[in-house]
Image (cartoon, rainbow, N blue to C red; front, side, top):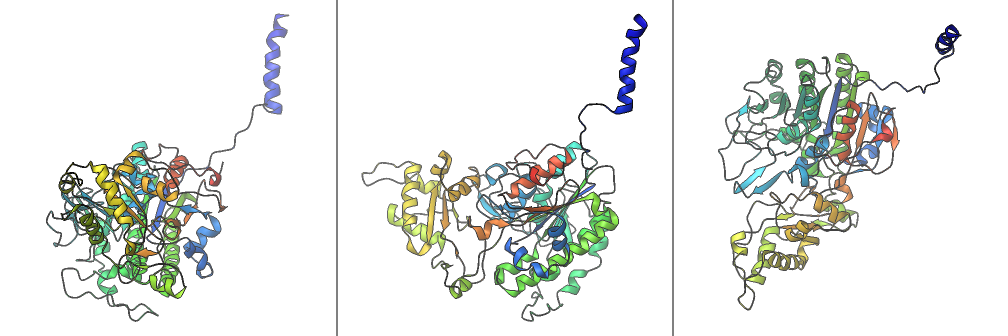
Length: 537
């Protein structure tokens, strides 16, 4: 009897071997990529994908055919400018959390205007000698680092999960190279208009690596400045003899060619995607933005730049395939912002819009003079949409009875005065007091809240009517309107399910989605969601 009892479990085990277990079968997890290539095209509206679709036969075509196309990707903050978009891309963090509230802002602690990445504690590496001395404002020529970015990026989290991961950032602009790659990058590289070199700063290294020196030694910038843009003979890229002979080169097709070539050099030199850990290469194609500012989104130059970007991406993808394999590479492409039509185009189309007839700061100052008497009301160095008020002047304001007014009362009166200036075409004005207490409302109010970081932001925040801007020529971007907010979001590679996805998403969703694919911690300031609809399971 005892031996029969002992035999029964053995028979069950034999049955399981012969006929299979009754346990559920789980699908194999997708292989993690060896390399992530995160691409931003500076100033590239979503409709450039659709308007010029028949002209694409290279990298954009491949992403659209073989990748996930999120057709309704909209930024949710103001301002929609380069530094903000680049900081969001791989951090997922709004300016309200990241502290990157613009390309520049007035820093109350330093008492001067700063850029999003300038850092006088560091020095340039590989560049010329014309960097400016500290103060009264920092510029794009100053040494740079990611220290003003208050949050982590995907690259930072990759390095935390595995220190063997390499992270490299490349752009014409320092902010375009630094902000997506983050604090722990092996290197971030940008273009120096004095030498024509790609340079970095002592935040990353004391000298350029040999592969970067070899690329710079090709002196490609010198050969490009005299090159003609076929079909557009009026464009001249030769700068006057000065300390910056390559100043005009970024606003040319050759700026993007320099970026693509340097990215290939980095891929080879750093052996990206060829180690034991996943690596990250961030690339920002800057020249589209320089050209677009000058001529606007409807100009033939913008179409040509878009086609050239498609062709450059094809070259990059071919090199990646040869070195790493596209099957081992996850590619994501987006833009940092769109752009408004030129006022001239609006006029031809019988649409509202135009150049503002008045200087913003002068108009606001005049309104405050009328309300409170003459004083130095404004600290110069804000932006068209963010006015910094002089605390010393505000503290002296009294009402008609001679009683002091609170800052909130002054801000509110100033807000109403600004709204009453007809030539400014202002749709909304928010005060610091309002944003401190939280403004509820439509997408305009939400965008203003998402862009507000108290220690760095201004005191009055202006939203103009659609298509109205300062200046006298060209166009720009900064607004919460669709032409500035709607951007491409394309993903292709391991773990990504190809298709067209029409539900609303945000660029903030990129970082947590990539973190999920890598099975690592999402960046610490991320407010995005994982795009599970496009993940292979």
